[in-house]
Each structure stands twice: as structure tokens, then as C-alpha cells.
Image 1: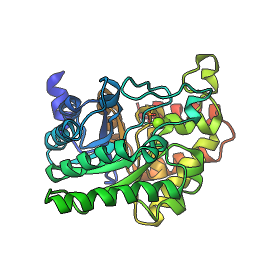
Image 2: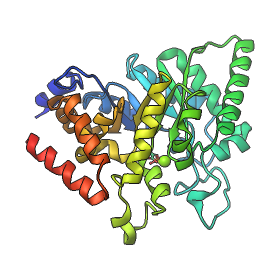
Image 3: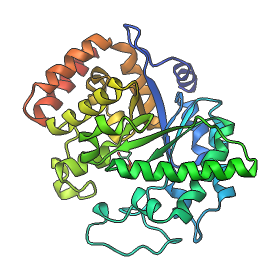
Length: 325
Ligand code: PEP
Ligand code: MG
């Protein structure tokens, strides 16, 4: 079994008609990068940095963060590592920061909203990320972006950090790529505008689905309404991918949908460039990607988009997958 895993880990995620996609791993801790590699990840599509903030009673220092990010960059041996700036608040509680409890935490003070309000915290992380960028192919990603202003403000702080580091004589990758999560419906809708300001998108379907369908992702009593293949969600995904491609940018996906085998052919057909998921899901998704053609998946995606309900789309996607064996 281990031998099979090793063999498949070295295989490319390329379709039968020669279309290559990036198959990346999601990690929450720096030490998980090696495991992702073993499972066949060819990069990290989402490094959730909030654990650094959740674990301790004190905010992580620049040096602590630098060491963590550097380790992942080095372990991934030059392959892309997309590091998301802290996505705290919402369901993620903190000991090191006293956040008010809220009526609607998922709609509240969280993620980039905290970062932009607390440059004293955010700039520490940005400086650590920049410094680590000279040890690998680090990309920076901002969570919960809803507007162009947020991207501009975050980038302005990033520029300040670059200027500081330059003045201090510290090294960093001057061409570091900066992207955003697409997980707020408004961001998906204005993705043609946002694409002008970023290098890439990564679709966070966990939140995008929750916000688009107005279905709490944690509430089991309405679990059946949480439908990532809802025609509304699917249209947003297509819109985002198309918007990025029109401007020569790429779109990945790091929400759970990226690891759902039922969705793989549809997502590939829509033109998704990068699939990022928990390491254990990589071998199965790679197997599917290697057994289909991009052309047939485009047909599947078009057919799915012509359907009226999530249930129809899901049944259809299951049946084409079953045909593949
Ligand atoms: C998402 O929302 O899909 C996502 C990947 O981010 P998280 O699950 O950390 O909110
Ligand atoms: Mg999210």
C-alpha cells in the first residue's frame, strides 16, 4: 500500500488529453507539509495560519512565524506554498486576543477585517511571510475579501513592510505573488474587478456555500440545505474561473468541494487550475483527474450548468463518475 502511494505520489495530475492541473495540499501546521508531499501534493494550496494564533496565550512573534513559514517553504522544495493570513474570528476562538462575542460571528469581526483594523498584528505576519519568501515559492493570500478597498489596504500594508525590510537590509522575494480567497458572494460577483488587483484567486467553498445559500455551515439541522453543487454556487464558481482566465490569472479551490470526487469532473470542466485538499484525499482525486479528458469534463460541466437543481446535478455527476468505474 505504501509502495502504491509512493508511486502515485510521483505521478502528475494530468488528464488523458494532456491537460495539467495543480493538485495541492491543505495544511494547518508547518509539520504537515511533509505528509502532504508523501501523499502526492505538488504544492500547498492553503496553509491555515490561524492555529499559530489559537494555540498560545500570546500573539506569535515575527520570528516564531518566520520559522514556521520558512520550514514549510523549505520542506516543499521550491513548489508553491500559498499561505493565508490569519482567518480568526467566526468559529475560531482566541486566547491571545480578546474578541467580543457576537450575534453573528460568521458575519462579524473576523479575518481580513481584524487584520486591517490591527496593523500592529497584521504587519508582524506580513513581515514574517516576506522574510520567509526568500526560502521558497511563498504566495500570500488574504481571507474573507469582499471589496477592492480591502485588497488595496492590505497591499498598502504589505508595501510598507517591504519598504521597512529593504531599509533594514533584510531579504525577501520582491515579486511575491498575492492572491485572495473568494468566499464572500460579492467577491465572486465582482471577480472581474478584483482580478485586476491580484495574482490569483482561491475559492473557499465552505464559506462561499454558507454565505451564498444563507446556510450555517456548522448547523446540522439544516445540513441538507448545504449544497455546494447548487446551481447558484456553480454559476459563481464558473464566473470566478472565467474572470481570472480573462486576465491571465489562475483560480484554485481550497474548500471541501475540491476534494469531493463527485465534483471533480465538473470543476475540471469549468477550468479550475488548482485543487487543494487535505492530504488523504489527494490520491483518489489524482486518480480521477488522470482517468478523464478535459474535453469530456467540459461537456459534463455544461450539462450540469443546464440543470435546475442541486439534486439533479449531484445525481448526474455521480452517474458519470460511476461510468468511469
Ligand atoms: C473555505 O471557506 O472554504 C475555506 C477553505 O476556509 P475555512 O474552511 O478555513 O473557512
Ligand atoms: Mg473560509
